[in-house]
Image 1 (spheres, helix red, strand yellow):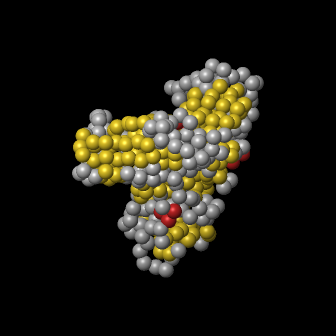
Image 2 (tube, rainbow, N blue to C red; image 1 turned 90 degrees about the vertical axis):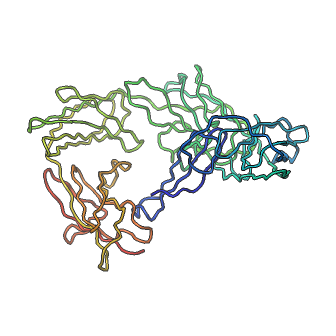
Image 3 (cartoon, rainbow, N blue to C red; image 1 turned 30 degrees about the vertical axis):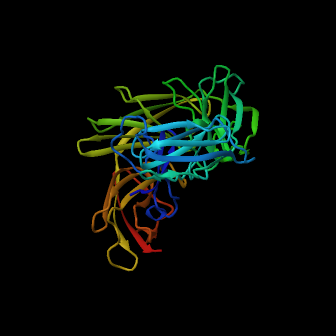
Length: 452
């Protein structure tokens, strides 16, 4: 289960941050931070009902404060300050005067969030120390209360201007350019995105200080796979991107992001089977890095083609069934400016059965634990996001079918104080190497867990 950490409010969007605790995942995987965007004004939790927007109710309370420049401490006039009522879409806006002072007078008692923004500084909600992952502080007033000291120090926003071009230097229109964290491909503030014009030009404004990378998603025809995300100055891996050191108020012009060359590679898969009839046949194309998943549309005779693929290594798998029997096929192919054709014959799928046991005897903590059989190729996880998985039984027994390739076992949802000690096939430890799944076979494994 995901643990709710905080509700992050930013303008008309609210971000709910949830974290999978490290202990609930296999030891070789990091905790995953998920960001769920909730279409509501600032809310402290998730509400099933979204009220219609309207004005703040009148009352006898007031909220006041000042807005100054964080670098010079000079007052900022004409700043828009928004007061939003929690658990609703009702809000009220005022502007600061020449002395940077604002006041919401004659408002009802209640719990509010306050946010300040203008065109030259980084927007900020009250109580937050960072604009990009804010932890806002609510402002509560009661009947007849005059609340003051709700002050803001806004940092001057940076600006980045540039162009997106293809590998021959031609402008790329309608490309999406965004600021991304150097460790996470997420742009947390919608304002830090831009779309290129017909000349490939873009402008990002009101950017906060820090170390960032620029990410670009180009537009392609709907019948071609989506291009992988490109990072400044023109690389496909985020770790190879040039980091930008952004300081308050800086202006960076002439940034050029070159999209990689689009090859003419294509892969045609022809799926067949000696077993007839077969039903529900599907085929999928995978690329590990940069990540790509593409369903292959198969014709009546079992053939399907994916065109316009960037050069690289791809994995293809197909699934179907004949009655109650599951059938599978898979292959790996490297393409470099070429057309490749693969013949894939569906065969009976393999199965893994086994039990989770405690290292020192007794029952293992298996309540809510899922057993995943992850597909790997030479130590690389081919499909890390959606491994084949089942929930373990109350006695620790499990059975995962429909398998092929080489598989490693992972436990999802294991209690934080426990970890996987080893995965045994008989007496052989296959924890890191995995086990080869031959067509139609059943492999028996024992998963040993121990306290940390």
